[in-house]
Image (cartoon, rainbow, N blue to C red; front, side, top):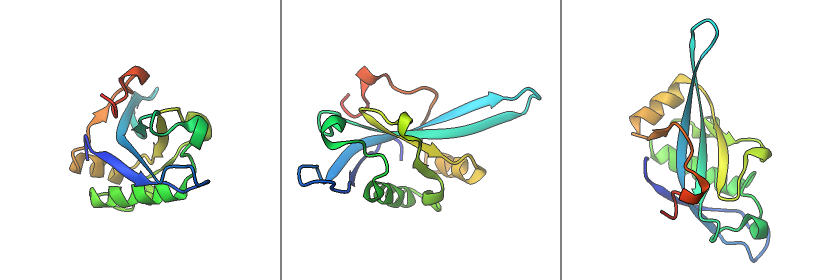
Length: 136
């Protein structure tokens, strides 16, 4: 699943909206040790796309698009995830960007094991906006 570019369908709010969006899904692993010394881990993900091909000012955010989310879940199942619909969902509206869709990844043992089993590269920090992984 690492370094795979996904082309996924999107719902059509109007006839001028593209039928598909292409981008790369990148996971981020957060690690923190609480005040008692107990390590905590949680994850999030971003689907980066080329803003020249999907202009959020023109087409709107992909956020809440059920067609896109269903297609993403289907691709994750093919990559070996069990029940991805319970493992990755849109984060809040304020987390969405001009060149990415932001997701919460449920922090559970099975999700982390699935990611490790599929060989997903876990990034400690996001790529900078000028280094969009889709266009470089």
